Length: 225
Image 1 (tube, helix red, strand yellow):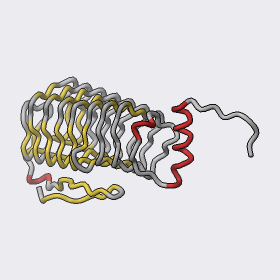
Image 2 (spheres, one colour):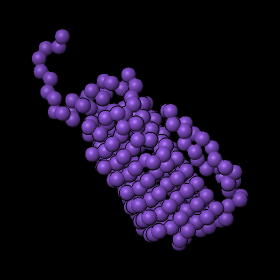
Image 3 (cartoon, one colour):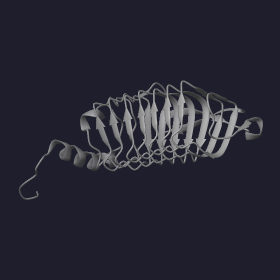
Image 4 (cartoon, one colour):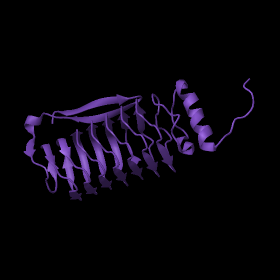
């Protein structure tokens, strides 16, 4: 690995790994156990399990991990590109300096996990559930689809979203104080009490107002003006 590169999402900087694939050891999927400076390229590990493992300084791409179960996995300095985690169950993960590019996490469940210096770029998380996820360092979502995504009991002070689709996205008992939601449409987001302390921009105020009124069940009657 050549080192790290910094990526900015709004006001946060995320440190991400930079690879020379030629310096990594080729590994086939499915694999069992730890990965260290490995390149896993193309393969299927549908409904596979990975328990209490470490993935370090590795590049994983074009993999089908549909329905995979990962528990208590520590991932550091890794890049996932075009990896399909559809309906995967990802519990107790520790992610540090991890880059997800064009990955699919549709209907995935990410739970009880800690994220620092993590970037989801061009990923699909539609219908996904994030339960008790904590950002302990900068975490960005850029150009992602989070339609019908549900976040429960999450603490996301270092999160930033930019250019994402948040239609029918819901927050339940989350703490987003410090999160940056500029550059996203908020009119169909629900769970307004979780948005205390977030940063938005003036152009988002009408959409946020619509969302708040819908959340509170406000009825407007009478002539305009």
